[in-house]
Amino acid sequence: MFDLSVSLSPIKSPFSPLLFSGDLEEGLMNVSRLGYSGVDLSLLDSAVLDQDWIIGKTGSLNLKVYTIATGQTYYNDGYSLYSAEADKREKAVARINSHIDFASRLGAMVIIGGVRGKITAGSEHERLSLEQEGRQAICQCLKHAEDKDVTLLLEPINRYETNIFNTLEEGLSFIEEVGSDNLKLLPDVFHMNIEERSIEESILRCRSHIGFVHFADSNRQAPGFGHIDFGKILSTLEKIKYNNAVGLEILPKPDDFSAAKQAISYLKKFKG
Ligand code: LER
Ligand code: MN
Image 1 (cartoon, helix red, strand yellow):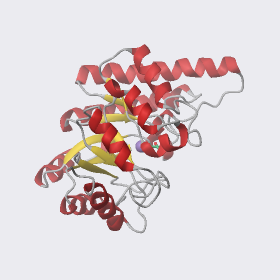
Image 2 (cartoon, helix red, strand yellow):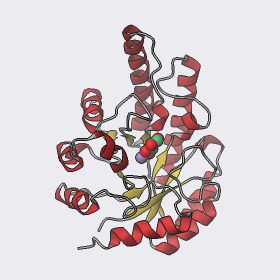
Image 3 (cartoon, rainbow, N blue to C red):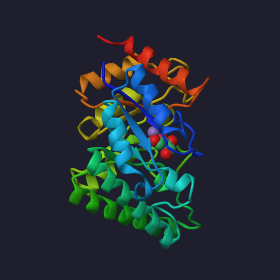
């Protein structure tokens, strides 16, 4: 079985599949006690965080920080990489760059997911031009990531949340076109359950570009509380020799601790 991590946030956020949000210390203690090997941190602005406290606390609990998730910049503050307003795109780039700096201290990767926002275009011409602006914004972040030796993870997200990269195939074409070793794909099986014809076939097709994965069940609750076939997905990840942790990004249902416990105990049953 793969190592497991879980998404936490030091502050409350409108982005809801996070556990113990608003109390990072409580979250870290609980997931460590439950046997997780690390965490994914959903952060607003790494430039104004107590980075030393996070490094010290995760280190003392022997928890690795696998990724920094960056969607709060859009969900909390409305800044996004594909915004029609240049200053909002710039603010989003500055936030991502602050996360890249922190990630280089942690040895973590940085997710480009919800922070893309949505393209709000009146015409096809406007849409194409915003696609270009967004692409440039991602490339600016990528340049900083390359300088800092940090990997960025492009996460396809379902159509009800964004209109920029819904499927793995769309993410893959962008990654191949950009052609940087520092840009990889993050398949999230919750989104894939909505968008892909076959979760397993899409994972196989993108096998050499996958940097991290997110798990949640069909209703975004802990695995086992919905109807996704995790046995099949885990065998596919084994088949492609996926060698990182599996990150749980799940709703705190029925409560934070029970969700964290359910996810790890359910997935551990698949241990070979
Ligand atoms: C983020 O990891 C995600 O899955 C999205 O639903 C929102 O950013
Ligand atoms: Mn996700």
